[in-house]
Length: 376
Ligand SMILES: Nc1nc2cc3nc(NCCc4ccc(CCO)cc4)[nH]c3cc2c(=O)[nH]1
Image 1 (cartoon, rainbow, N blue to C red):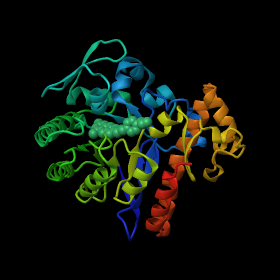
Image 2: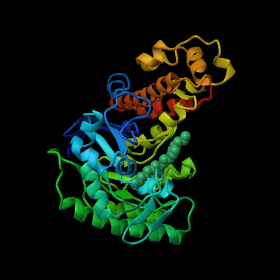
Image 3: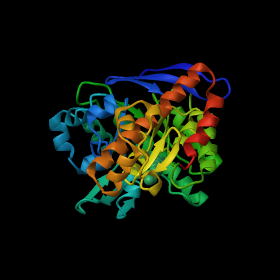
Image 4: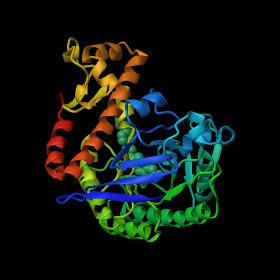
C-alpha cells in the first residue's frame, strides 16, 4: 500500500501525506470514525460520505466475529459489501476489546480464551485465527493481535506483556504473509508498538516493530488512562523511531486537543469512540469549544450548532432544538449530535492538513488547542 508524503512542517514533526488503498485514497493526517459492529452508530453511510466527509472508518474484529459472524460476512462478499461502505476500512484485531470487554478472559501463550458479552459462549483468539478472521471481514488495513498493556502496571508486567505481543506479532506476520485476501483486493497489515509508559520498553518495542518493515505502524497501549503528558512523551519517543516514510497510527486517540498535539508529534492516523459516544449523551465538540447541550443556558439559543464547520446538521439545526431533542431522549438527538461531532473531528484534521501545507501549523495548533478545550 503506497504512502506518499506531501509536506513536512518546519517547526514540528507534523506532515501531510496520501495513503493509497484499493478502496480509495486517504489524505493524512486523518480521523477514522469508529464503526464497531458494521455501523458508525446513528449515522447513515451517505451522511458519513457526504456530510462528514469520512475517508476511512473502523470495524472491530471482536464484535463482527460474534455478530453478524464470519458466515454472513463471507456470504455478503466482505464487510464493504455487507454495510455498503465502499471506501477504506480498518479493523482493530480484538486485542483491546477482549481485554476491556469480556471480563471472563484467560491470556495464555497460545492466545486468549474469552466468553462472548452477547451470549456467554466460549471462544479463543490466537494470532493465527485473528489474521484469518480479518481476512474474512475484508478490511483494507488489519491490525496485529496484541495485548494492550493495562495502565498502570508494574515494569515486569509491562515487559512480559510487550515480549508476548512481539512473539504474537511474529505469528501474525507468518500467517498474514502466507494467506491471501478473499475478495480480490489487497489488504495491509500494521504491527502495534507496546511498552506501556516505560521509555526503555517503548524504545525496544518501537525498534522491533520498525524492523518488521511493514507498510504502516501503529502505537498501542496509550489512551488507557495515563496522563496526557505521558501519552505525548511516549508518542514522541516512538515516532522518532518508527520510519518517517510509513503512516503512523495512534490507536484510541483522542480528544481534539490530543489529536492536534499528536499530529505535531508526527502521527498520521487517529481513531476514537469519543465523538460518537459523547454525542449520545449531549457532549458536543465545536470550533469554539465544548458544549454540554443539556445545560439550561442553551434552552433559548437559536443559533446554529456550529456553522463554521460547513455541514448540513451543524448549520441547519439550532442549539435550542438539539437541547430539546436531547433532554427529550429523541432518537434524532443522537443522529444530529453524532453527525456534528464527527464532522467537527474531520473538519479539525482537514484544517490541520491545510495549515501544515501553508507552513503555519505550529502557531495555529497552539491557538486551536486552547479553543477546542474551552468549556462553553
Ligand atoms: N489492538 C489494540 N487496540 C487498541 C485500541 C485502543 N483504544 C484505546 N483507547 C480508547 C480510549 C477511550 C475509550 C472510551 C472513550 C469514550 C469516553 O466517553 C474515549 C477513549 N487505546 C487503545 C489501545 C489499543 C492497543 O494497544 N491495541
